[in-house]
Image 1 (cartoon, one colour):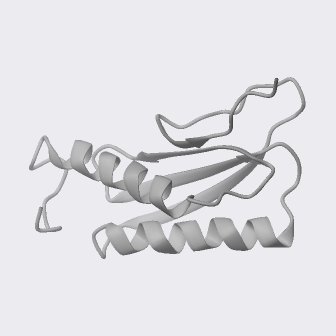
Image 2 (tube, one colour):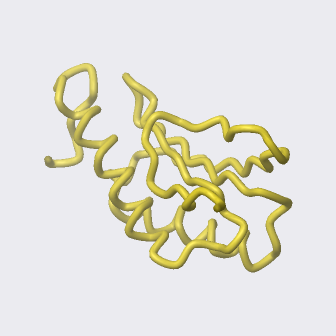
Amino acid sequence: MSGTERPGEDPNAWRKWQEELRWSAEHALEYPPGDLLAYSCAVVPGSRRALLKAHFSRAPSEEAVDAIQAVESEVAAYMPDDFEIETEVEVVPAGAAPRLLPAIAFQAPAAA
């Protein structure tokens, strides 16, 4: 893909960007922070906007925040230059499910 296609112009562009977003986030999370429950992402249909969401079991440490910022930087390197990328951190209360975006790049194994 040339990076100049618009989702409204190419029906496959959104799917390609969604998969590129998920893959690049998954690749960047080779060594996820310890308290990370999940990492989800989505390309907003009809736009050049990507949402990334880190779901933590407790407030992330400074090191964890740095790791998540590094993920955003790596993801940005794979997306077209004019993409807007926004990262959100969610602290998931004990016993609650994370509010996941459609594509899952990382999910911690369930506790035994």
